[in-house]
Image (cartoon, rainbow, N blue to C red; front, side, top):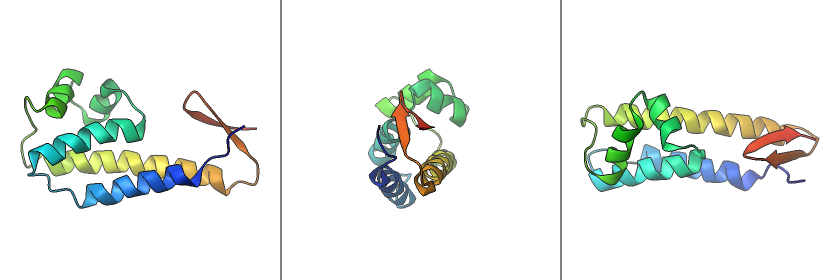
Length: 112
């Protein structure tokens, strides 16, 4: 049995803090942000692409530097990713407030 760890919430909040300071005009930093978002959110490229409403190949090109979204669109991309991070923090925080222990199985958190 694994308790919902507050370090995971801290990790997400740290990512959120770095994202808020991101210079979206810095293309290497923006690419790194996209790659990090996939890891921190524990989602596939397809999942990230879906909630950004782009194709998976498009997201892959952004991450690998073969293309980038228009500079005016980049803050929107960051905002959408931050929304996903906030949602994940809210879910994890609600689990950590409970008095019972929780178990992490296959990426999902279940009350035991």
